[in-house]
Image 1 (cartoon, rainbow, N blue to C red):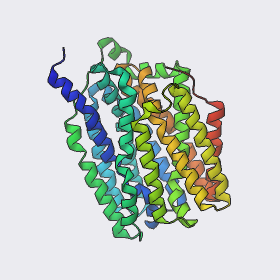
Image 2: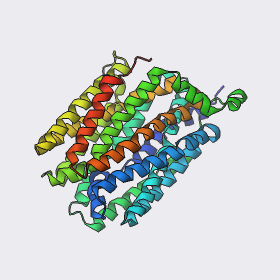
Image 3: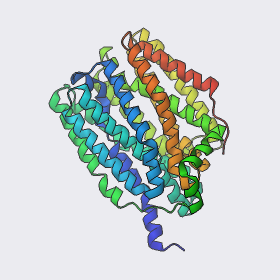
Image 4: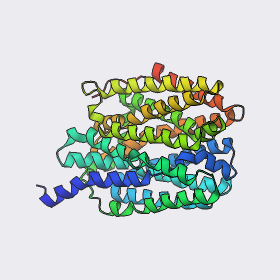
Length: 398
């Protein structure tokens, strides 16, 4: 029987994870990231190549980090992620060439690996230990809303600080991000490790093998993993260069700030109240609708890029970003319900391993296409998004 004190501390895990996510996702620099890279001497091709470095780092550490989380605890793994993220900010502060930026982005990729799966697992297993498994979607939605919580105001802060695109302004933003990342550590230290089952038989069989068997034997999960991954990567390819592209086509830095305020505010409230979005419809069906909305928006964006229509670009970009963000708690809840407690972090991270398998070739293709015309990248993104909607639709699961 659980003591009242343990129950109370477990309940606090949700707010602690919320603030860890919120502080690590401040990312003020993200509002002007491509402009920052170009200011520091990188080309658009090199920006996409940094994506290859990120993916390579992620794929090398994805399974080891999550295997460690399942074996030795999620709290320690999240601590490592926060430290690595802080170190990546240090490299961003000083880097003025591709090599140093590559080291920084590799550390960020490692951060992603140590967090992915581990964060969702600690939330889901906390709900299970508290006997509230039915609330998992609600809690995951609140957790994902944390990604957007501080970002409701940070875009405007970012564009105000970096309005002249000067070196000291970029350094100020990076310093703020470093401080807020360190501020996440007290919340990590206070986390309570929820119980999750790892018995001797499962240790002998191997966590990795069981997790892979679950994915391979469940076509619904595999379809969901692929559709989540490719749509996310499609949005990421556009995001990598959208600031520089927008500014070159007459969109002001201030407009970018307001655009991201709208995106993040909508994403925050949608994720926090995810259970109220079409409540009588299955998660699978809702995700299908969101994927169609995303594909329609990116198609309009690609066409508008050939005709230099600034406001149509901004509006369609905002819609595709919102559609992409709202899907995540639905996918996470689906994956968690299909995973077993003893291998949850590893199973969830195998989904991110699939991401890396697509990420590297797509980033290389984008790096090649952007050398001809950035609009060709947007056409590529439209094509792969349409492919997901037509050929890899989500199957009904739970």
